[in-house]
Structures are given as C-alpha cells and as structure tokens.
Image (cartoon, rainbow, N blue to C red; front, side, top):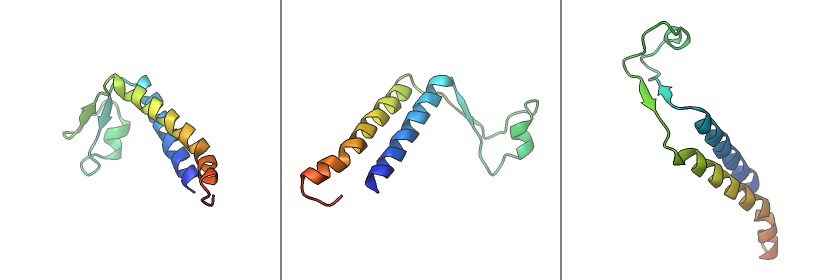
Amino acid sequence: MWRSFFLAVAIMMIILGIECLMIESASLYAAKQSSATELMDPTMPPAATTRVWQPAEAVPWALLSGGAVIILYAITLPKRWAAGGEPE
C-alpha cells in the first residue's frame, strides 16, 4: 500500500513539473464568482478575482527531481523492509 501511495505522489509531482516547464503563467479563478461562460469565452473580460501565478525557474526542476527520487525510493522500499525482517 505504501509503495503505490509513494508512486502516485511521485508521478503527480513529475506531471506537475512537466506542466510547469510548459507554461509561463496560470490564471486562477475563484469558483464562487466565476461562471462557465467566463471560463469558456475568451472575449469575456477576466473575473475580478483572477490571480496569475508564474512558477519560479526552480519549481519545475524541484518537482521533477523530487518525483524521481521518490520513485527510486518507492521501488526499493519493499526490498529494504524485507531486509529488516518486517512483513511486506
């Protein structure tokens, strides 16, 4: 169970890291004050509560490297538990 949890977290970190490499900024809308029309129609003015997030240069690389380290940890996790005498 722990192995699959760590693998899922690591894969999500890698996906977020790749996404952060591909974007320059992301617009975050408040769910309460935005309608579906505002989100889908590019000619509408942005909502009043729009926040723009620009990831720093280190964020994608930190996510990618952290995800890779966690994947390596998760792959070796059962082997280390078996060596210590604990059940898998």
